[in-house]
Length: 176
Image (cartoon, rainbow, N blue to C red; front, side, top):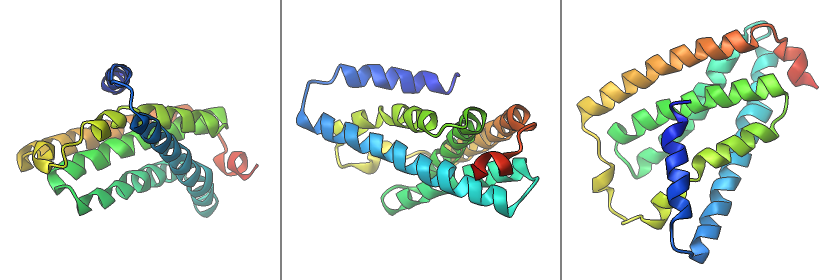
């Protein structure tokens, strides 16, 4: 829940932006990101992993979430590794949580909506973008500390999601 507080504050700030047609464009963009990434990672990859690794729920959840996080490596085309590494780990943590929601609810719509909602603060970034990477630099030491801290949180949340889904037969559940 603590991880959601900055996101909720970002949503509040988006509501305070002066209206521009670009807000609608960016809103549609972040909505589509949530829908497509959840469909790919929870709707397609998760069932494939469950089928390929029967009885290994924890491994399936971790691989799916790390794959989701690793797609953020594409940001290395325009950002420094010191900025992308913590982003990758935070995306993997988000992937864990969304994976747990999907497995518990057996409904892909809720993770899609949660994902899109968590991306709403990106509208602020897009609307205030200065086309300057200087504000997106994190020191190597800071990046390492953030990355290690996020990895620790990843392990804790992995345990929590596994605890919540351990009794589920995800191979059967996701085959439907």
